[in-house]
Length: 441
Ligand SMILES: C[S@@+](CC[C@H](N)C(=O)[O-])C[C@H]1O[C@@H](n2cnc3c(N)ncnc32)[C@H](O)[C@@H]1O
Image (cartoon, rainbow, N blue to C red; front, side, top):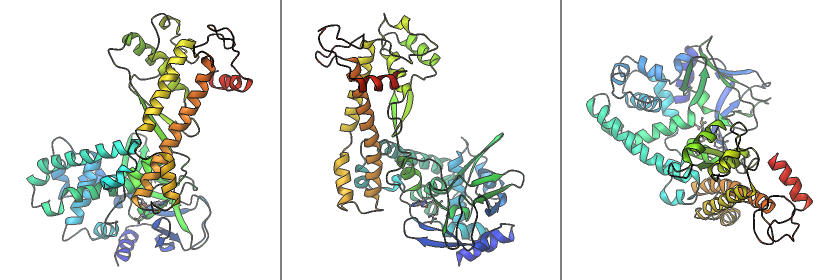
């Protein structure tokens, strides 16, 4: 019923491609779109004219809502404008039939991490998702209160409070996070939700295939691969790690190759030689408060080592670091041993911070303690992804440390061959030396 209304509204306004597409429930992804004709990669599958998109401009152009939201001080954020727009249309009794048909087709509940119970979220305690979700929940409470004070309570006729509760606001945010598309055009950047195109699920196996065409002011979906009749059509939401997938979209992909752990490094302003170190960091292209994505393919990025080398320079070493090269190579064995030991300690403490260790999570998944597709299962996959990366970082750091300290007496070694202190042990095997060259040149 609502699907027919939505189709008619879109087709009457110039949308193309809908007659070959059908909404259907699929076992792994839930509701999605299937094609009723074969498609070749690159074919135009769907065209939605710009006037149908949910955008900030459309909200401001609305004759009833526009004048009210444009007078709010401080101005609403993009997300809040879209959230208010969605809830406003949802609450209307008359007019807006087309947009209302779309809103009625939106999911009534979400599985994004802010919707998790404390018990579900606890499964991934220690992960970056856990901390961000806790912050987000607080942010949602704060932002809702601000909307209540600055907008909803001032216009109760337009925003009846029973339809603009904190839960309604969270529902709207989840709709925007999980269905919004971002486009960057010359001189213009915008976020939109595109009716019907927002029914397309994600597959990492198709090319990026959603675009906005500024000439025709329309959103287009192209086929990201060849399809046969009856297949589900996908778009690609991007190279998104599981912690982000669960936060924004409410699902995870097991063994996601894009998983990351964001390592945050900072230096205290009271640290010795702080000003000189900040200058060196900046000339090395690094910020003093920096986030480094650790990934499965690069668990120990060179920039992490560069940052730490500069952070731990002694007063006699600081003049030896060339600003331009920015500590690309070892500064001294002492410095190197110190940064690697610090990183090992940091990784060990990060791993200790996960409430459920990797092995236990894997066992719980294997024995179906966490059922596929429930929130605990998804949280477990996020935690597993992050813990695997940190373990790889730890392993790699330990291997590097073995190259700079003497296995016999533990002293940092300057000549790579024989320990300067005990003079007895030749401790670099050929394999380690090879690894050393690969990582340090
Ligand atoms: C843009 S909407 C797609 C349509 C959505 N399935 C619906 O019924 O409205 C994005 C949402 O679809 C679901 N989804 C998309 N791709 C998925 C996938 N590969 N696996 C599981 N769920 C997926 C998630 O719930 C996500 O938040």
